Amino acid sequence: MNIINQHALSISFSALEEMSLFDCLRYVNPKLSRNKIKEHYSKIEQARVVGRNQSLSIPLDLANHHLVFPLYEGPTIEILYEDKNFLVIHKPSGVHGHPFLYSERETVINFVRQFRAPLHLINEPSFERGLLYRLDRETSGVLFYVKDQYLLDELREQFEETAKEKIYLALVEGECKISGSFKHLFTSSGLKGLRMKVFNHADRNKMNSKDPVFEGGLEVEPLKFNPQMNLTLVKVKLETGLRHQIRAQLAHLGFPLWGDSLYGSKRDEFAKGRKFYLHALQYTIKHRDISLKIECLPVDFPFLA
Image 1 (cartoon, rainbow, N blue to C red):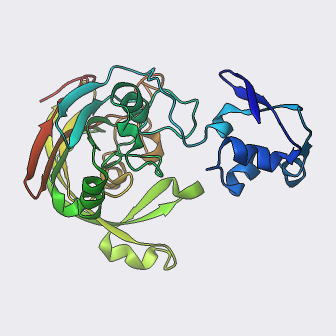
Image 2 (cartoon, one colour):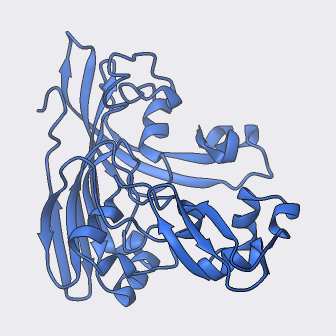
Image 3 (cartoon, rainbow, N blue to C red):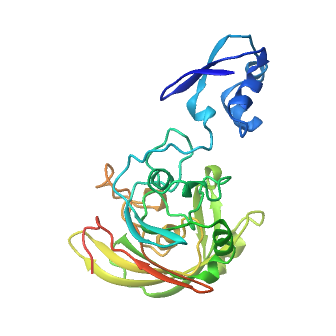
């Protein structure tokens, strides 16, 4: 098979011998699974015969599935710290950790691909590559990228023990006066488990017995209330690391993140800007002879303590 032309949306090639479309796709990208191909083509199309010297185009996102576009075209990413084991960055709000499609260019992994290649090949079978943990797209702050596969596996396997401190800043609606440690039960709900539901331990009997249940804990400390904006800046120490935990748990306590409509916020003043205000302020990692404490302040919070 000869590739004739490549551009932003598709690649064109001609078959040197007769073969099915399915075989053509697997020839271009051997990592393509049958399920991935089924997302783009029907069974009839997969069995289509591409004749000798016949030209054919396929989407570039499919041809380069699971590869990373070599350029980063998002907001400025600041490198906070780097050594032989880690690349630690200040992830801006609105930047996803990793791409789902080859055409995406505004993710942390694109940044790593452009400025620290070949580190993007760490943990290559995973979309997340060397990212030690996840931050939601809208969440800014400290994010660790691990440079060594063996170290990454160790840290992820023992993350609850090695991540000694996970501290966040959040802007919540209303005057938050509660403080202390809170533990709740979590289950996922909605389409593809998009939203997390939170229950008090006393209400466990109200939960669906078939759903997986997780316990999440955090500590809340109010820092500053702004009466004009009716917002409170709070510090959150994350004891566990469940999906959407801070967002869901603070909303359950009566204080949704400002602008977080998924968890009950009714205020959309910044619908065209940042969707909600959550920032990973500090992460402390301790593992064997490694001891790192990295901190960075948010750059776009309206007010700080």
